[in-house]
Length: 252
Image (tube, one colour):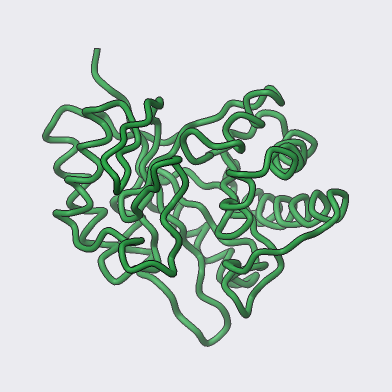
């Protein structure tokens, strides 16, 4: 049986006069786009244009929900009451879903961004709040969650379809969490190194940490961060080399 994988990237992260990433190029290489909803990046015009580009490319789309933190690009931890966080997530889902409907596109998945994702990966209560918000909005949405995380567990417990994600360009700690960006070894640099990192995890059926630990996990999707300087080259290399190795790349 041929292994099926999904290649995703975080897009729509420009804002006003500020441009980030190479969305059009990435959309030709990936299967699913996680589109910023205006809280960590993106604005209404960027959201709509990104959806139009995704439709033209035939790429599946999902909501990249975040803490309300434009200044910090959604990477600063926040502590919010569960009801407020749920409302913030619902607001973002409704905004992108409304734009998608105007463009004749169906929203397929949800992927938390930055600090919201990192915190929900480690905090079971926060993960349950995120999963409940997604379920409340639309229980048919797929939750794209980091492998071996509390977020993955909470999504499954809530009855959502959950896909386990690994990162092509991020390193892992021995406990399965991402190496903090404050450390020099947090990022995997370059297309060749990212491919080697991904293949090691696919072949092991596990997260492979900087300490050499192997943490078994299903793997359904691979993320390339769209804001990195190597994003397009890395996505192209993964797309080509995974296909050459017999993997079928497809939308969620």
